[in-house]
Length: 116
Image (tube, rainbow, N blue to C red; front, side):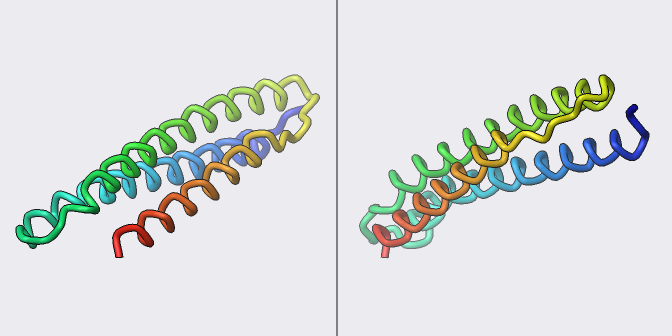
């Protein structure tokens, strides 16, 4: 038997994932534009960071979009499970997102090391 609080908790979880995805996409945008800003501010500097920042920024935006898709899929699946009364928590989305965020961290660390 589903309750209003079950559905509200599912919605809160979905919105938390949406916020996380938006934050990752915004970070990607900032990283992508960082190389351009450095190039404009310091015209005589070697332009090492621009290709890296653009590539990493694009990867981050794609990752954020992927998080949005995973969040929506999980929300719909959980909603159906709550309504049918056979809700089983799934860790697939959480594990996938955790690995994705770990890869993002490694990517950003590599970017920082290469552009020092």
